[in-house]
Image (cartoon, rainbow, N blue to C red):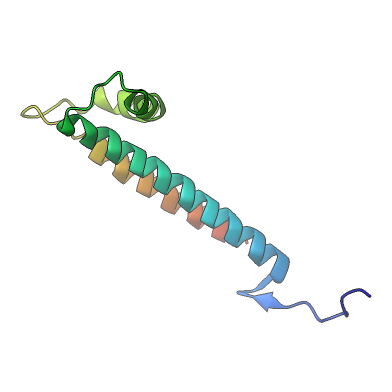
Amino acid sequence: MGRPNLPATKICGMDQEVYVAVSFLLRLINLLFTVYSFAIIARSLLPWFRVNPYHPVMRFLIQITEPVLAPLRRYIPPMGGLDFTPMVALLLLWFVEQLLRALILALY
């Protein structure tokens, strides 16, 4: 026995299947940006606890966050011994995430 033929349900003006796909995509984007933001935060906080930069976890955090932080460091010098690059990177990540969400929602 198959599913009975039910009328297509519209959610927010979308078919149910499209709504599920868009919802999944938005949640995936949110998850990826959240995990990357936590990696940037961890990388900026761990040196305060004197974690060896050659520790495998620290090396991993450096490898995944350096592609974003290195270009920003060229334009944002350290002030008073503090590196504000991670804060700027977090703001830029938030902005890019919101832009992606808006573009995806605008398409559907």
